[in-house]
Image (cartoon, rainbow, N blue to C red; front, side, top):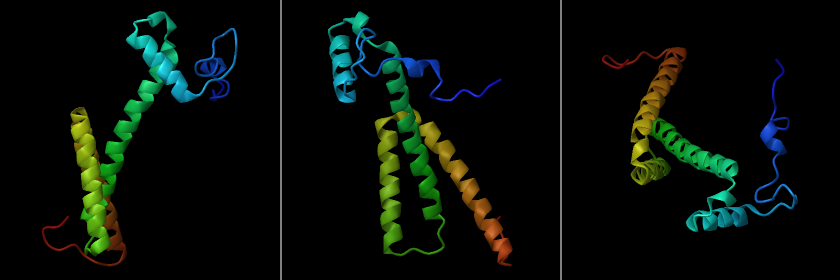
Length: 144
């Protein structure tokens, strides 16, 4: 079976955002979203470009999920540094604030943040242990 690329995907042949099938004049993205929002508010559902709006909503959800995962993955290695200097504290405060803000804005992502933190901790511990073994250091008793 041949590999499908974005260029050959059937949806890629759709007209650009906001262009009707009769005329293929592309409009800018913000204008397209504004027109879709206006049609939605006026309950003119037949004017909505459902496929493009669905794709954009999925992208927004994906960005929120990525933001939470990214912040959680950045926070753990900062916490596991063996020493702190002033810049590290700024990093720690910033990443903790951004993660907390993202979860407060979308509480449904709290479980995802928890999973990402656990995964990041496991990854950081594994990396640290392998580095200690490579350097010939042994973990202190009780630290595994």
